[in-house]
Length: 191
Image: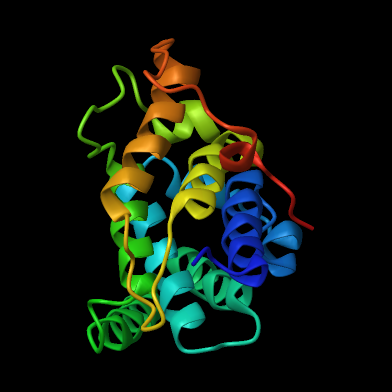
């Protein structure tokens, strides 16, 4: 079965707002540019994905607030940021085989350009600074393609990841995929 629209929207909004510089209202008003802080270090971006994934997995009602807490702490109170990250990682270790853990694995490939076919010149800061819509595209493809079973296990993780890799290669390196993207794969509704 396909992902629910709620999960697709949750992921898409997070990615879009994270890379647009508007993931949390406190960060919009802050006197520092969090994109400048995190995008130059892929590990910090991936840490934001960890915090988001942990909050989503735990059923936290406002996952972007959890990420905002981490980024604010990262800037002002680095040891507190470590505590937030350690707590998130601890929650994620409880179940390494469900959808959210697979999402985190995909996010890691994105943050570090660890796809089976890496992009030639991939730089989170250069490519995605204040451009949430560009960062969003591989996540749109991935969330549209993945299928899960009744136990929340991914059935086609490799294929979904390959298609997301192909959209990045198409957009950034000009490499056309062997199979053109379908309308269903590119469906990008989110609010």
